[in-house]
Length: 171
Image (cartoon, rainbow, N blue to C red; front, side, top):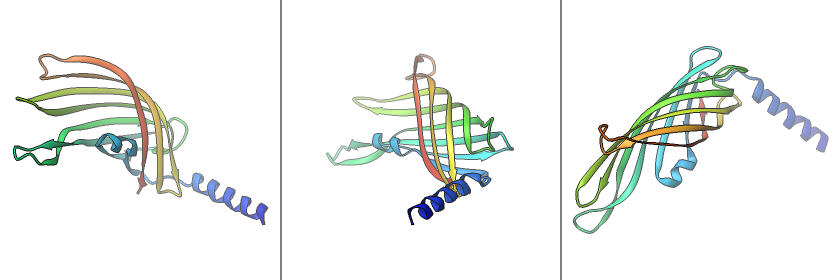
């Protein structure tokens, strides 16, 4: 019985990995939800080795109104566009090299309302696993640079790591 169960699970997993993945992927980054950031990513394979994606996002925060009550509000929004190259398997599944760029804008409420704008660039590597042709798990690690400030006339530049943990569906 144990051997039959092991064999069945092995065949199911190998069958799930052997299928050609669907060309479109929609993912959500669940770790970002901890910080109030909602980021959806739509990816499309453009052939065997290349996919492109767009990822709009928003940061939600709680703000206190003039009446003293708190309510959720959008604190910032962003949009990233990128390209992934899959050298060993058919896009959008397998090991990938990622290159993306994005723009973001945020608002800070204080004694006066301030707005900050920024540009972001990311270079990374990762792996996307598509199971049963529709279930997607994607992870990656990269390096990002950001240029941000109260306006594009006074940008400060920063560097740091970029982490990708995404769950989604292929269709």
